[in-house]
Image 1: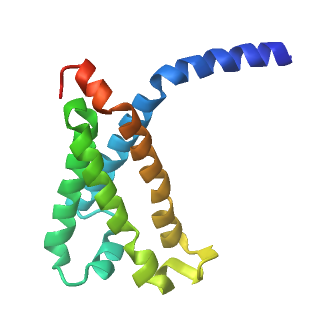
Image 2: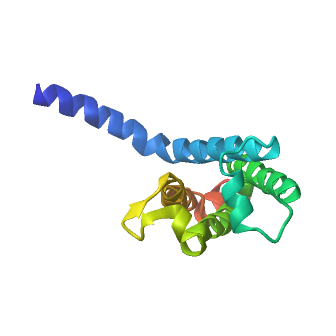
Length: 151
């Protein structure tokens, strides 16, 4: 059993070594396009959270604009030439999405910092998106763009 499992796993692992960063990039793009589209069409479950966090902007204007920005980030991840700019925007966006943890503690935590609410968990999962963006940026570096004549 073990030799068969190892053979299959290492075969899979070899394939993932080659393709996993593109899978990560496309996954990030899907999430950004999907969540952005929900904001554009007023269907985002995060709309109220955005409204409470960025209360000084009119939500009926700000939330769709935020959605458009998120869709552009998603599209930028799909177009390899734009990845360096897109990663910068994504990391800036992700930094801002962490604000509610600090300014809306009662909404994000039942007991700070150990017991996040569902909203808190929604925000904390952004750490995974940040990590994914960092992995993607590691592949699409100066060497990659020089080799592809995209620099």
